[in-house]
Length: 518
Ligand code: FAD
Ligand code: DLZ
Image (cartoon, rainbow, N blue to C red; front, side, top):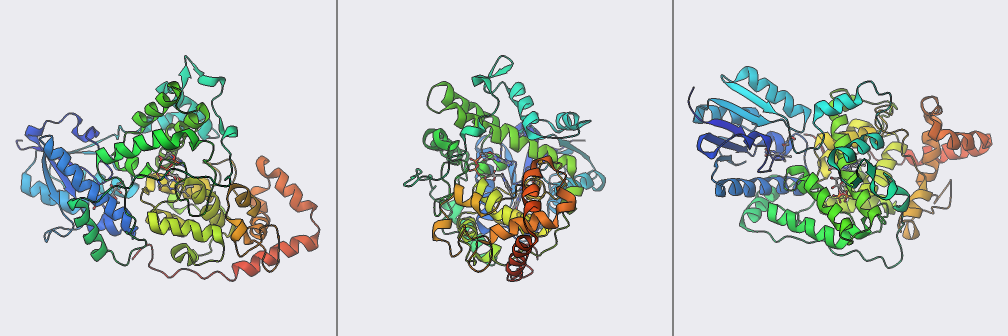
């Protein structure tokens, strides 16, 4: 057969070295990029997430064209747009009469199924190539997981350190330890002033996209007022350099801290750029290592940062593909309470929760500890249904793709996978939030009060969670101490906690249907 090879590039594959282009030449390749309704609405994404992806896609098409590639770009409002990847690939096959289709595997199970179907439906060869932007190829992850009883991130991370040579001296970790987490638990300090994040000006392409999103997705969650995510490779590189210079040195120390109104603290805020392909994760880690080697950032900060990327990020991705499709329906703790309305509105007197929803709404971002220990901890303790919670996280964050969102929600936060991913649920009472944040001082609730009117709801919810899951969790070694404390309590005290939690749970308004899915 003659004709070019058709290379579809998806909205999170915006890397010039993507595997689908690696063996291609511009002369006999047509790149296909598709803005499609199915992707913009399979969940009702935050407006800023849609704007980020469409603007970055349009800029990437320009980047490819400037490098000599032919790009067939389908815009969302093109009248002939069929609305799905499969429909658009079929139409492009009609238009270009290619001799084959070559595509990099997608980040989501749902899209992988669609791609597999192309092999049956299209009258030509369809090659689906591995995504080489990850450090650990999936077959290697499956091999690592095979036969292990416990799939703990820490062991996997050490393998990745050995594989990449990052922070290694021969076969030993630099500094004599693999992990400097103990040094990375600083709470907020009075007067802590993190440097401002760079905000990128909107060019004509971005303005056009922002207008489109405002008009077409007006009812989706979130605001565009503060939209300033990097949408080009050059902007992403500027954001990266800004992080390495101004925030990496204190990244470790304040990694777990939360400060009301300080939405990014010393975090990288690079996950959207990494996930859509504007930054290469391994290159980013090598640059972070250089900051330590050249004396500009301490080892505990750099090790902590590198662990997030070659440790957690890679491990989470492996776990997604290992555990799907079952992970999407997992509900190991049989939690069935619907998502409360305040996750969408922020209207709750609990200051920690309302601040975390506010930054989510304004920035399509909350940092890790807000996602895990405030929004996630509440979902765990209140027994929210995992699928409602997963939908919420998938909608609201600019960096959310199912491969990374779902294992974090179902595994790390909700223990819905019965501990495949985390050795114990990250359940915590108000005392943790008080220690790690400045939220509690000005909250309507009293974090020191355990039960009754005005008590911080996290306190009673914590014991309610342990008590109602005793049959499932009491055998966990790492929960032995809290269960011993629970059993030592008088029956009256236990009843007080349970009644207090029940009274609070009865006040929760379930969210209206339709926020996350049509
Ligand atoms: P930093 O705190 O500066 O960390 C640096 C980088 O490490 C991040 O950019 C990210 O690439 C990586 N990283 C850190 N922790 C994780 C992790 N647990 N899993 C994967 N990568 C990690 N991250 C996403 O990219 N997309 C998601 O949809 C997502 N959903 C999450 C849901 C829950 C319930 C939780 C607890 C975490 C989730 N995370 C997700 C992980 C983490 O919260 C974000 O990666 C981080 O907040 C992004 O902000 P940052 O770039 O400032 O990260
Ligand atoms: C998230 C998203 C959105 C909102 N829109 C598009 C789009 O119009 N076109 C596209 O190619 N990709 C989009 N994406 C990203 C895809 O959902 C993502 O590539 C797949 O889910 C695979 O991870």
